[in-house]
Length: 167
Length: 148
Image 1 (cartoon, chains in turn purple, red):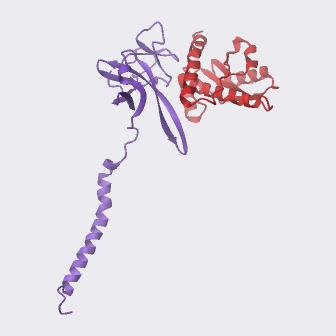
Image 2 (cartoon, rainbow over the protein chains, first blue to last red):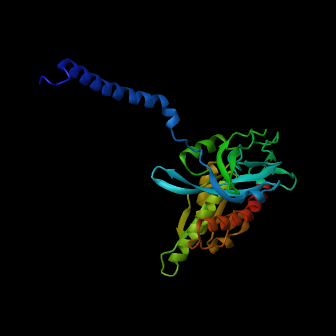
Image 3 (tube, rainbow over the protein chains, first blue to last red):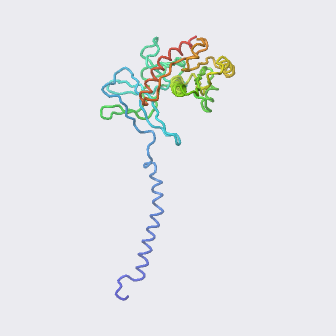
């Protein structure tokens, strides 16, 4: 025992520091996680869906592009097909949601022969300009929503719906 | 609008805009030779009804399908639906069916008869495009009746 380099006092203080350190870490870890939690959170709805539309094929005339994604509703999984009206404005690609802001019908491009160059909702004759702006004195009260878009290997990808940024 | 709690709340506050009822009519056939065909026709009619609902969401209420057997009296089916839906003040009632027997009932009843296309061998994409094609032909029919 006499050749032991660590005294009893030292041994105790090392042990206490060690154990205390673990305890402090054990308490702090969850707190740190709480603090940085927003960063670790997985983004919902931010995923992009690949469509079969080639970027090069998009013209200045709005064209309907369908895209399908899986929706989980409690235990029930289903494939949802949504559509977007896609066109080119200069170099920028615009994708508008086809859902009428009045009561949720589907709008069509130039469906009303009397109003060229506009989106038309067949339910209550609501109309929108090409950039999605609702035409005054028709039932809709707001512009069409827009989709986030990006390019992936020459094909169009469509993201989540955002409020119209063109109007 | 679907026939559910949430949509019916919207319906009751927006009656001025939502003035049309759509009812799919489905024939039930228990016989050996008709069973499969009737089931396939029902699948088509219900899928089409859903596509119609998606297009005209803000103007129609899609009711649950009405199923009947061949021996039931079709005229009385009409009358009871008509009577009940008038209470909810629908201006138009459309019936969607692929049962040929209804097509002879006359135009004035707003029967939309569409011959059934067997969807069971198609994949999702093909189905959608077939249903979209059918829908495109239906839009003018709806628009015409609404315009009157």
